[in-house]
Length: 112
Image 1 (cartoon, rainbow, N blue to C red):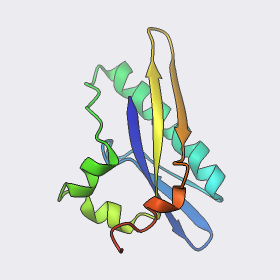
Image 2: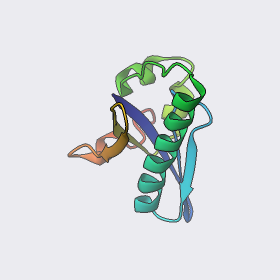
Image 3: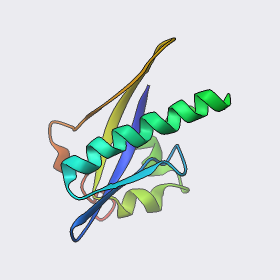
């Protein structure tokens, strides 16, 4: 499954939120930190949901988030969208992220 994280950069602090997982957020001192911390937060959040027996929701693509009135504001305020790939097996969960070959194409898309 793929999950979109939205990176916000403000002065010397970086934050990431996951619109399809309210409450799953992280911060870092650098862009690399926030990507890594986002992967860790995502893994912990999903592991907690599994342990609690919660249903894992369907995750939307960036294009779907951009047209949803409930997430358009978050997209407009984000500096970058990052795709995280999550693999669940019977005994493990792995999270990896990837940036588009042109990560700047998602910068401030709503402002354009």
